[in-house]
Length: 181
Image (cartoon, rainbow, N blue to C red; front, side, top):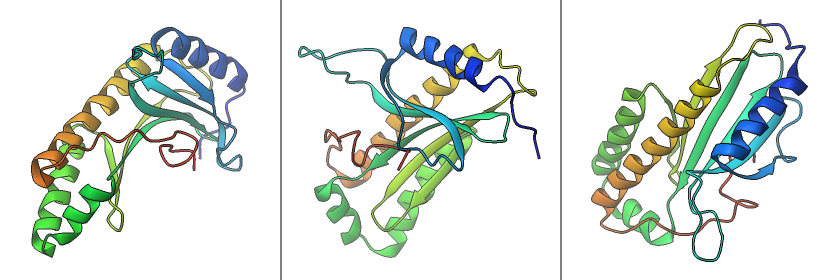
């Protein structure tokens, strides 16, 4: 078991500073499981806004597990009702083929796929490890956020191609669109 980092506040400050510069930092999560995580952030990446000033990048969570020298970067994809209905109308072989294609793509990106097949929730996750309390991986964090975000776009494309509908619903970060819950 890895020892607990002694510089967690410094790590949190370093990550927050980076996220403020290159992402739209939506919130520091107060909803994370405090038994398992020291801190967490919810961001939009890339740092772009619509005409009303709302962040329109992909939602990404950055979490620091307790007693581990790692950071988890993740995003979730949900199917809206129309897409879920179309998916559920497929036979089991077609459903399994689609989920296999998605899982295989995510794994090919050296990411962790977690797929909950009932409602087709897809979690795309990466982990960054560092030695003891030394974290010098802001560039690695940036690339991990990009890799998770880009992979989610490809997965949405796979879903759109197979389901024949667009999956572009706006999700509320305080309800479903969050790895923190």
